Image 1 (cartoon, rainbow, N blue to C red):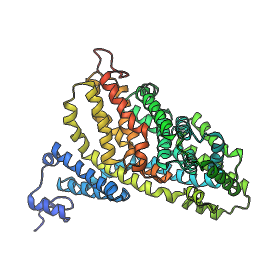
Image 2: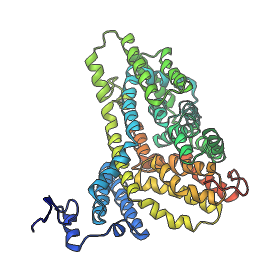
Image 3: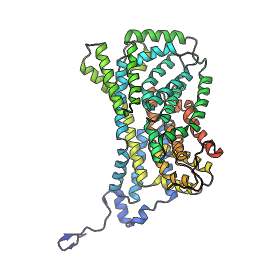
Image 4: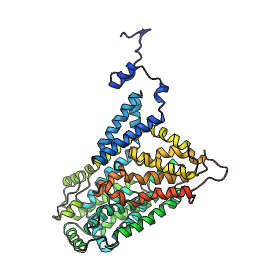
Length: 498
């Protein structure tokens, strides 16, 4: 085919961008789609794409028991293939991926810092010291509910579930396994307490995000959260007390004594190991962001390592920060627990964040989730129905994408106007975004938060899921609030927010 020229300027024949790939060739043979045809994605088509994603990820992660990275990567490839058949350009696809990943740059860096923090906290004797102190302070009979309360308190103080799980959580988990308690039950109590703290802290990024997306005042948002959060907290505490009371085996005290002796011999167990914990509270009080807090704690822990052992070599220390701490106590249980951390240990989670954000960026670019939600939103009439739909929307985004932030952003954008049109305050929406979005990510096997918790504690998501009571109960109480009207914040009469 000759290329015509007009006034010396070459005019390309009308062919699609990237027409030499398989999809482009098909487009060319079938004829080009107009812009209107390309962008007019129907409800049934959006549902089909989303269900395909769910089937692939569910079959891979739950059915075959493989890590979530590959199923998510397959889904991304299938969505891109669909987009090309829909005649979306490669530029639009690349832009969707870029826009999605951009939102996760800071969290990715935080995960890397957490990997370093875990390794230096163990090497400095901080986590072993917390374990020894905990064995002396916490009751064996009431250990599980105590774990829930401690993690809730620390999580509220520092505003980060990830940091709580990866520091104090590791120590408490080690204590629980030493007592021969069900690891999944202990992990569920740790994660539930950390989520409660993250959800109710003004320092939490997820709590700030939910308030910002709904255009709600942060502290009013936290106060309004209590209508669903306190009941979920109290019921969880009772369940942990029932399941955990007397659950320790008869030889637990003997095993505890052996573990304490091993820790005292191989680690520096000192009172000043509490210094980094104190620094975390100080940083929280001073409202220092997570990155600054983690860097300060890493620096202090490294300083403690050199003070405790001035002969420490720089190269082995740096390698430990990269690949993780390796315990050589000779006690198999202690070595398995304390051989962890390092930048490399976070790379699996970092890769998952990168891919889920890429997938979320594509879904937002092509409006797939918004299109799937719209018919449902348009048919809602009762406040309870609207709250339930908002909760289910957050759960759906968690299932389809597996990313905590997007489970707040996408339903927030879709439901803000319907909530206001029904006379519901933005605070009602912000609570729904937390109860259906933030807390549920820990229950999705391919969710970023659940993968992080599973890798950090060494317990699979499907194992701790039945014991993560706070996450399971929060949406239930939120839906009850929607139908009963108890705690459901409404706009003043005759006022509709724009």
